[in-house]
Picture 1 (cartoon, rainbow, N blue to C red):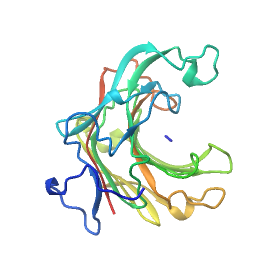
Picture 2 (cartoon, rainbow, N blue to C red):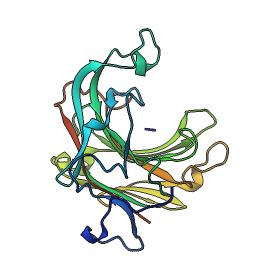
Picture 3 (cartoon, helix red, strand yellow):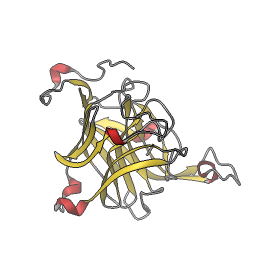
Length: 269
């Protein structure tokens, strides 16, 4: 995977939860208004974006209903407007779009340096699905800007990752933990909502699911080749449902539309 704070999209009086000790809620989207996602909180990626993935990203595949953000992956065929016969660029060499989905991000609207980041969500774990909840640093090209994958899922595994730069452009140093779904010993795990969390301070990044620590990254070890530390700058959030590509697997036998359902996203500091 590859602005000063304003409280938007969060009505304090309606919040029915209590912030964890030592933290204050600084931003949240509870997705309680039906319709399109709040444009004060989210923008959308468009087209074929990364990792050779199969989906064409568009805003139409995301909506809010019954207190959830629903990102829907669809199987649908139409001409690729970028198609260029003979192009070596994977984004342009495909004559048709076979799948669509959505990727939402807070870039240019909200960013944070350190804090507790939470999402409650239910994943579609069918073959080929690649949902994620992650961050990117606001400055620098990938991976020197830093990437934190609070949650990735593909091919029956939960991934918790961090990545930063090396002395080669676009080549990341990865710190990854893969947790098979079978580890949770729950045949109905995929039918349930789960809480994904990152606790991030000046020393460590700790990634959790349902309060179970999956991964720790020590920031003393995350230096780019130029000596900068991409996890000591603000990051913005992304939530997306990808398909196929480098890691997602083959979705051709899966049932569509597929849904990534998000109950809330919250940031505490």
